Length: 491
Image 1 (cartoon, rainbow, N blue to C red):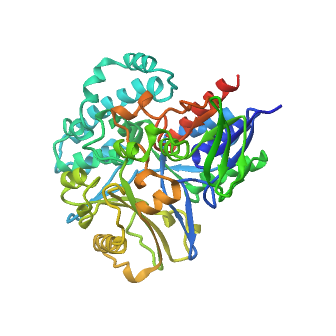
Image 2: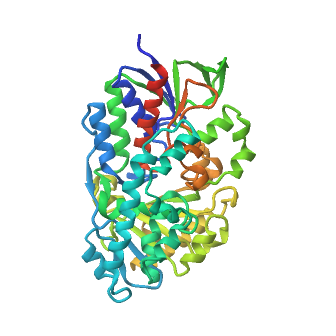
Image 3: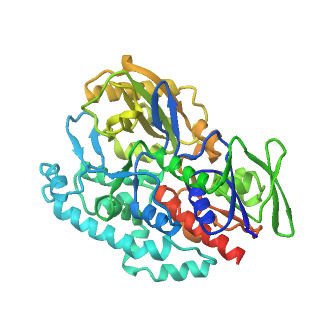
């Protein structure tokens, strides 16, 4: 008789694990709080426009290819490599930097401010590559059952990297580059982890290697939500049911085994094993009522920043704007050091703009553009009142219009805003922290909430706040680690 696994949450981690399970003979049923699958990797369809709501590109494409091979499926979406990866513009400067993977084309843009950029960049990449190759298989792609096992794994990492553990990303980057523009542009990737270069460990400079050397970044044809739609289609063919608008509120247990979960309507759901794709720390505290994860304890943990995201439909085209764009100010250090906690930084915001319709004509009506803005902001621990959201969004739109030489205010025909409050309520994110728990020394590896429950031997976790961490490729790796846990339990 097939063993049944109940999965709570249909984010990318939950969907990927569901595919692994069903392809290996398990019976799978899924519950999803919201009206559609995807979690933070989601989609809005409104006023004739299509918007990706979360990640707008991904790295480590080989993780998807390996996943498809292990599951015996064809990858159910198409992706294309980005080159340039993205553009960067500084306030008050007409120059736009194009982040090419070709080092010569990249270095040429820094010729007047950092003449020896190519040599410096190659040295930086050598170190970033060594960090990646010496850690990813030993530390990131492993389940750990004890602190001793984790320490033993760390001891296998080349000790030459130890000094980087005690440096910030910013201090590591500034060791290689002297111009402020190069320092800021190269350190931008730290924001992808939900923190800033000033409070992210230098070891994460390995992400620069994944950007420029190892694999690059990729877009999905038709928008990022095609990943989710593809995964859901695979599960439909396997007769896996996803029950939407179903939120877990309670549970029953007996002698160290979870017996059932209860939804908002009082209905109970039971299985042999349970996989939680809700935030691993939040679920332990809010559903299982674990004292170590009670809200006051959660507040003492280190969380990622909040995100103010908004989705704009325009009745015009913007040929001068590229697909992926970062708009920076003139006070990078002050801004980054304060954006996590000081709402005042929003007076001069830094932000990202994705023009989804640039290469996806179906995502906007003819002659129109679909824009997705992301602005890093304090999470709800530091800024709880978002009644000023329209004022902040208006200021960003004004700044963007000035930089691109087109006033888009009167061209807007669709506008949707997600504040950290929306992210918190929609996706059960503690204090609206966009990427869940941060990745400091005390919250990585064995120190992160584990993907196997500390009390119930038949409960497992997948997603951003468990191992290995946040990001689309990490969710795919997380699904493999969770699947191994379930297999071990069943056997």
